[in-house]
Length: 74
Image (tube, rainbow, N blue to C red):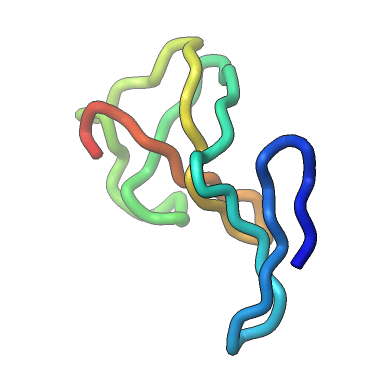
């Protein structure tokens, strides 16, 4: 187990080591489109509209750069 000052923990799982952040990580992001799944071919979230610059709470991510965050849609 390893802990970072920014709230991230490295833990061991049956799949090997993973990083988690129990509270999520806040990030300010510029205008962007969000998708329902980590693929450009999936449905565009937010009724197809761009999200404007605001702070989001990141709750998960993939090794190829996709981020999962909380919004008013879930």
